[in-house]
Length: 188
Length: 200
Image (cartoon, rainbow over all chains, first blue to last red; front, side):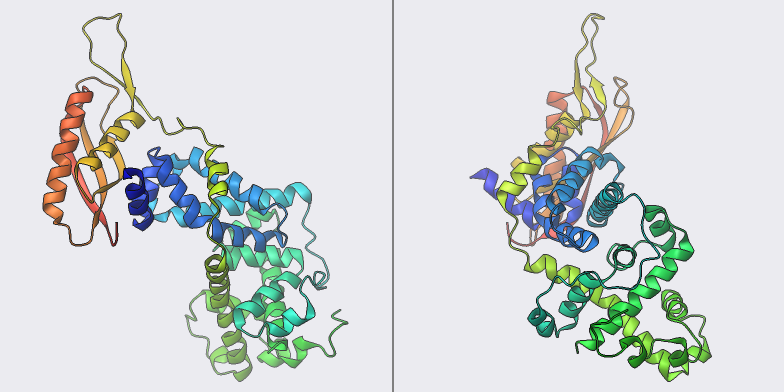
């Protein structure tokens, strides 16, 4: 069928072509973007919220916003980072909604462990260890760290997103890094 | 603080200023952000700082790896999920400008949307095997009948297809379709091959 041929060609095409078509109103191309970037947008949102309950709603909302605002995407080749920014903003909005102010003075007490003890033992590889350590990171630190290292935000942008001073962001990031490094080392 | 651990890992792993020859993790983070320039000899020559810098760099690389791995190990995206998103979007969101047809009769007001014209341009790919049209821009005042318009098209081709011939055929096809279906005065059609793909 002709439609299948176009569909397959689109799946093989680069972001500039696919996002360029989607910007021009081609729904099939937009569907390719949804397939291509749902996994990473879900993974990011999950890390940001440290919970899975609302991840799908947030990612869906991000795609709908992207479709409405395609006119603001200047370079279709950069659609991935543009989508990540949108989903990140949606995740921060959700955090603000459920929690009026970020408790930046929270003790460095780990979040309640959500991993089974044997899962931690299994977490030998660096990536798995990081994943497990992130789940234990206090929330203010986690949000700063995710925005910085996974979202690529500057200190100033994080301060703006979270509504806290830049100096606080710097402090939280340092604590997050110390926490993650030591937790991961302890499991080695 | 970390009462369920036997000892204080922060101390054991040496990330306190005492272990870092008086420097702090915050300072080392900034130093890494600055690309370790200008070089700070006191940091570069401190064994404690070197260990901490290595750990910080490792951590940074792992963040990206974590995202990539989680995305790669996720199950294929469910088509019901795609359908759910598509059902929530407005189909005319990218309609763009309104392009009038020239008419001598003041009572007749006919127009086509920019989005529909881009759809026409895109459909030209059906006549040129292997071509996939990307973004299409109409540069010029399309709302003014008779104003010259430049059409700029991004194109993807299959690996091994003759680029020049493909571009020429597509340009002719687009020109023909625009002439037949719109009143646009097309000054030029710029075809940019920006993508070469394998497979279909």
